[in-house]
Amino acid sequence: MDKLRITGPSRLMGEVQISKAKNAYLPILTAVLLNPNGITLREIPNLRDIDTVFRLLENLGVKIDGKGQTETYFNPANISSLEATYDLVKTMRASILVLGPLLARFKKAKVSLPGGCAIGARPIDIHLVNLEKMGAKIDLTGGYVEASTTGLKGAKLVLSFPSVGATENLMMAAVLADGETVIENAALEPEIDDLGNFLIAMGANIVGLGTKIIRITGVKNLHPTTYTAIGDRIEAATYLMAALAGEGDVFIRGIDPVFLESVISLLVDAGANLETGPDWIHVMPSSLKAIKIDTAPFPGFPTDVQAQLIALCTQIHGTSIITEHIFENRFMHVPELCRLGARIELKGNSAIIEGSTPLVAAPVMCTDLRASAALIIAAIAAQGTTDIQRVYHLDRGYENLDGKLRALGVKVVRIS
Ligand code: UD1
Image (cartoon, rainbow, N blue to C red; front, side, top):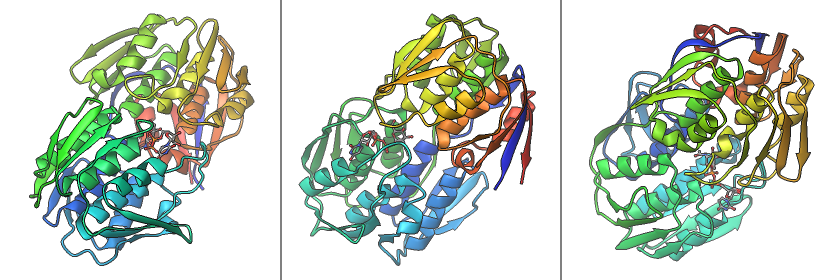
């Protein structure tokens, strides 16, 4: 298993190009299943989660050409299976996103239940209850969701929580359904808009993107299209925090700062010296004071940046408090950060972080994707050489992480 060896402390200097968003491409890739005509997607990031979804699509019978190249071509004309197996779903919860498209186009689907996960129980009840409202019959047997329908029908759906995945699954299901579907209390994350724009580019009829009420009128056919997803706001936020932790000076390119408004305003209020342009953020050496923030659905502070912010808070002045509201048990990075000398106390779903703490290298282990990003930031700030084990968690979501960090001046090597 690969590990990363980082020798710190380092001050990040230079420019980094942000990849296209993993969390935009995962639903877009499953939406390809809706359309028997060819789709071309551009600049898909080279990530383990993307490889997983490629395997999932290929198992279903989608032909894919040009993997790893600027343009990747998908031919979903001849689907040979309607089943997403446990092997694939267990490694990536977003596999559940094939349910809506398969049901919409083929009236049948069998998808393994994602089950528990390292950052909480993560049920899929909101997906299933609302597919039922659209006319799906759902059985849970043998660890699988077995869904069938005589034809999905438009319905009024009121989500009990603005789940990102449920909003995406239901949008995809509604695209080919009979009549109008109204999704109320829809998630507002930029990746929802991106999926909607992709669906519209294929001929879907959708209004209300970017609001809590999305209206989709079913269409009979979709047409070929070429599409490029938005930049990855979580990757950009990770480089932002890494730069601030070491008083670095970094141009972060390929990201619309509007997607990170909650993060940027929090950091600026704490003293961060930032400039933004249409598709860049320039972070300059800054001295930050303590932070108090709660995670929340978009446009609130993203749960996917909570771990990285905790790592940054170990290096700023004063005592910070970060409260997690989206996932239970999302503090697995805390004991690992403490191995590097961080002083963090957990109280319920809050982390209380003592600032200006000198970190010292120690072997640490990745536990999930964003927890691992926190360890990277801490290792860059720490004195000495830190070995970070189980890097495959990072490879799920950060394209060329070690290459990008090296280009910013970090002493990092990958050891196979
Ligand atoms: C997506 C993101 C993930 C991010 C999360 C929250 C992708 C591929 N992943 O995950 O990186 O951390 O949004 O911003 O885009 N819930 C239920 N029932 C459901 C669905 C969700 O109770 O049917 C709960 C979950 O357990 C969790 C919360 O709602 O506590 C948020 O989940 P959701 O918004 O669905 O996140 P994901 O789509 O899984």
